[in-house]
Length: 268
Image (cartoon, rainbow, N blue to C red; front, side, top):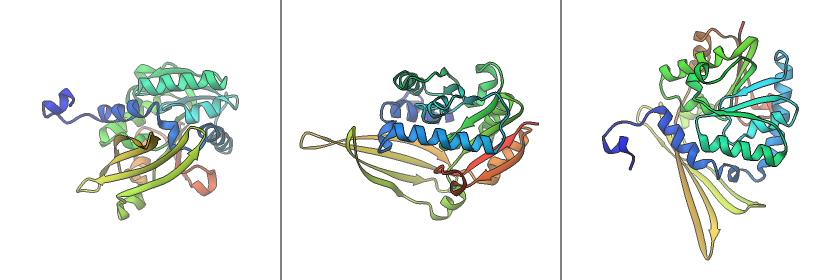
């Protein structure tokens, strides 16, 4: 039990997200049948999106929610100069290791997306935070802080690129059991599923990610728990607008090939 829980203090947004991604860092690739192929595919998809959106040159990107590098590595492999940061030191260390294994170059750092202005030097034509990362920001104050920090890292005309689950639909159905899959992959067979516990007000939900792998005559089970905000599209748009960004636009999975809706906005 953590000291905060022992004292009866509610863990902060950063504590909840950090614990989730520190625990997931060595297993995140297991969520995919072939993670290196996903890296390549998402790099190609993002390259195409950035070209369509006419992101300003040079091809330089800040991925401020890089995790183990799924998008950062894909873009670096396509010739982008990528600075990859994350709240989780373990995830950043894994991204560095994977960059060496894939023979691509990343610069990296540990940073909180709410304080990028103090933790990351310079500005970038593109700032990314994909795979539902911003929905770990459970309050409007945290969301606004992250939006302002991302905006501060954009060069003039620069583009912010975010992706989130379609919470507008999720809050209506409030799924409890989801993402169940059986994968037979090079790393071995595994069973994946998630249990979602919704808050009474429907504004947040706790995800329990289970990974089961054969071990002897039974199964080895790991469980990783993260808390998410059911962030409505309009609330995310408004946060970017309050941060001084303009030209907000949603790009559907059908348009991009990405598994979540993507929101882009631009600095003047």
